Image 1 (cartoon, rainbow, N blue to C red):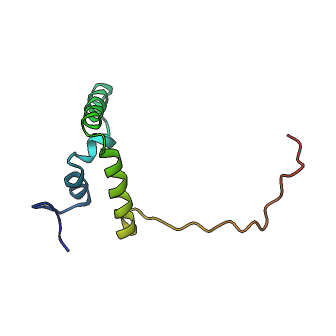
Image 2 (cartoon, rainbow, N blue to C red; image 1 turned 90 degrees about the horizontal axis):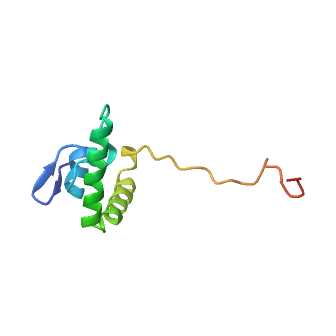
Image 3 (cartoon, rainbow, N blue to C red; image 1 turned 45 degrees about the horizontal axis):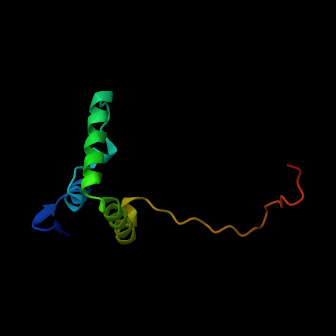
Amino acid sequence: MRSYIGRHQAVSTDEFVELALGTPVELWLGVEGESEEERAARLDAARDILADTPHLADDISRIAAELIELHPELVNVVPLARPTGRGRSSRKGAAA
């Protein structure tokens, strides 16, 4: 199956995210071995982008939620069991 963002084909998950957001993933996550100076410059650029695009954080949240819903295997999501209350001791009356 091919994925397109506009006229551009995304051939990897990173490309899909980069095309969807309009920025490289590394801008937000950093890269292994980056210096403090490189990190500071990357974070400054990220702050500038967020200032110029205030809706970007909402877009990222929406895209992530849609991706998890459509392809949970990409993020290894495992449903958690709901607590039943069994086997848990009550803390009522316990000294603080």
